[in-house]
Each structure stands twice: as C-alpha cells, then as structure tokens.
Length: 204
Image (cartoon, rainbow, N blue to C red; front, top):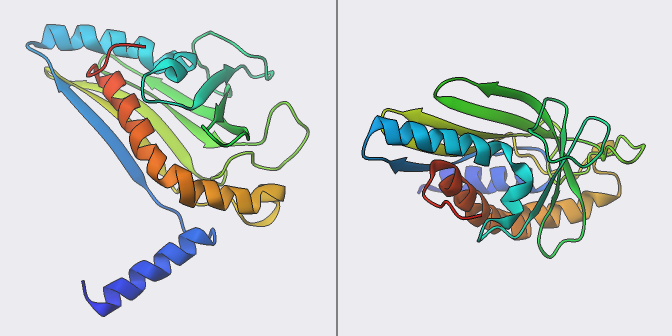
C-alpha cells in the first residue's frame, strides 16, 4: 500500500471516529440444499426465523438482547410491522439502543426488513438512542436462489452518533461502543444470525 493510500485510509478512519464519515458492511451466509424443494422448505423455515425477532436473543453465540415493540411502544410477540421498534442491549453495556422498522418486503423467494436508529419510544426525547446516527440502516434478509438459501445483514451509512442533538449525553459512550466492542463483536453476532437465517444453524 502506497503512502497516499495509507494517509487516505487514516483520514477516513479519523472521519469515522469523529462522526464525519460512515461505513457500509455486509454479512452473508449461504447454505446449499440437495434440491430446490428442500431449499424452499428451508426458506419457509427461514421466514419464521427472520420475523421472530425476540428469539434471536436465544441463538447460541449471540449475547445481545433483542425485544420487539409495537407502534405504541408496547412489547409484542407478533410478526414485525412497519413502524414497530426493536430494543437492542449489547453485552457488557447497560444502555438501550433503539431502531424502528422502516419497511418489510416479502415475495415467493425472498424477504427482508430494514431498520433505522431512532429515539426511545418510551421517552419524550429527540435524542437518537443508538450508537449509529438515524441515517444509518440495517437490513435483515433471506433469499432463495435455486437450491441455495442466503442470509444477509446489510449495514449502510454506519456513522457514529457522536455529534449535535442526536447524540445528547451519549456522544463519548457511542464512540466507545462503535469503535470499541461493537467493531469486533458485530462480526460474531451478525455471522451467527446470517448462518441461522440460511439454515446452517437451526437451534434457538
């Protein structure tokens, strides 16, 4: 790597650290089945896994807590809908992180939902209760192609929430989470989840 490239990389990392730049990151798992019929059956099972958000916390290797809330901010065990919320609590960090479901797409061979960081629906505050800014997004997706099933977690514009009113009193903590524990932990967490969606792991 040339000197210019190193300088550009360091500059970008500094901009990420100070909340001036975002990252995109995709995790994908693939499982191939003996036939399309079996892959379709796995896809049907994957739909249940994808939308059973509360069950993600029970998956071996995932130490975060996921809780689904409805539009009124009440805990629910139902299938997610647009404008529902998900509360996420990371291990070792006793703070709540909230995202809101923007949309849900589903057809015969794929399904996904996309979330954005948001304020805590249980409080009257405009502060984004998440270590990423509200413009960031995370998409959870399953897709069958022939006899293969894919599980995805797609992160877009993952910019640290440590500037202006969005961060509130959490600016320093959000930086520590995003560039500290989360940077390495997400590889494990989303890798386990995408394996689960693709059917490589079936135990909850």
